[in-house]
Length: 506
Image (cartoon, rainbow, N blue to C red; front, side, top):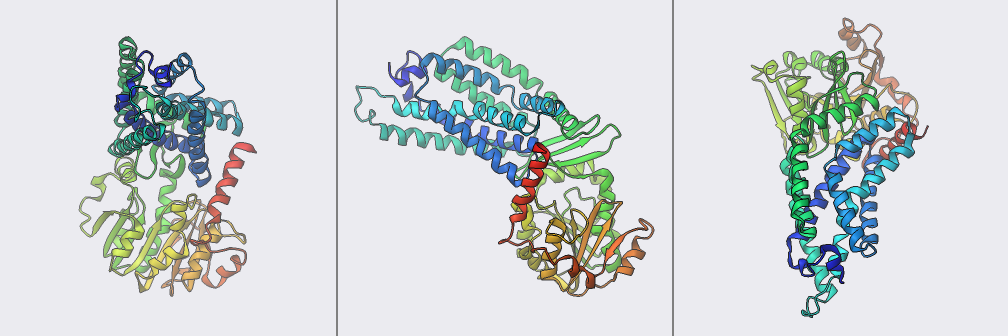
């Protein structure tokens, strides 16, 4: 019996159905997206984790290719049915298991085992098809019996399917999980039917799929809430919002007291308690001191800074790349009605770098409110190159305000590296640390239009023990710091590795 009949039972000519490799390509594309997004979120989305999860995906593919021609028809069919039905439990099953591993304190080995187990379940079943398709042959058609011709044909169809899968994923961006998982499960049902030709099995799969789909939103949020309760330690966690945007997984979680947390790829970006202090120091204080005619907010997807700076500015412009974060902000942090009547404010959904390169406006204040440099994309927004771009759009009296992930110290850690990048571009840099906001901040300019005493006076009603490092003292803290730049982004991997090993192996 040929390899083709081993896959399809008694139908050796099933390979003429070009729909099968096409569906396999779609399934591979969607599986890659779902697995990488979800496991990056589970393990926390530093660059090191992104690399690790992506590598596990390809390990799963490689094992599938390795086993493709070694499986008997009976074993293959059983594994196929088992794997496809298990896909109906994604993403709930691995979230439940991750929450359980966190409860029993299984450590890094447990989470890595979970990752690679699901890499096999996600991908190996699809990787099996291409080698078996290439191996299959019908003796009555000599041309088609050439493995090279079959490889080109089926690999091309699989690639077309993979691109169609990208389109399916794109249509699901910023929508609930059902918009991606339901089409994915339908594709899996098509694969099951084309391979096994068992109507009763296809019907059973369809019934289970419908039942799971009806409960999808509730179970999706519940499994995520368990993860935030047991792994992140949020008591009484409730997931209020969860979407995959084109850039990251965006979730809003509430705790038992009603505080709200914004998570991006499983990393805490901000919470409603800290948001007040963050906006106060990164935006309101410099706006109050400068009274800018033109003010630019880069990031700040919750739009919560707009209300703080609007009374002190002429025109306010917001630039946020991620529509998923904006939607989270509208729903749970800054309702649209709270910005009603702000006729001097405009919002652009755009990349900050792209916006600045196209803009001809000069700003008196640019607020760069973006996450800490835990990925390469985020690190660029803290780099020398980006600060030079910002400086080119500042007026002579203009100031850039950024947040640091902690207090400035004499080391080569993130606050020092970011401050060093600012200092390489701007002659004057002032740094402050707020215990109330639990963050550090820095202001850079050709010549700062305010001094440390003015900042302390402005903040006196909010915080009396604000720590301020005046510009003439900042360089003393930077003797060991290498400025973040395109050629020096080692901090991303080093910090990510440290956080990963501290979290799971110490």
